[in-house]
View 1 (cartoon, rainbow, N blue to C red):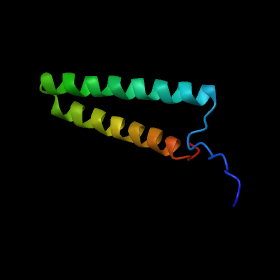
View 2 (view 1 turned 180 degrees about the vertical axis):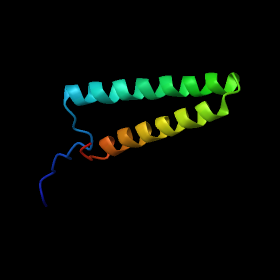
View 3 (view 1 turned 90 degrees about the vertical axis):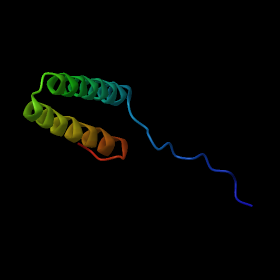
Length: 70
């Protein structure tokens, strides 16, 4: 039998990296609120632009969580 090995944590970020991810997720939520406001006001083009920004930001956060250095 082989001795049990401690699994390597998937998300081993420093405290500063966790803070950055938290801040990024709050910013994305803020952008999404602006998307809804733009749609409410009838500004579809602004809503589309903001949604693109939110999508790119979300992709960056997901890449960071998967271990990419961004």
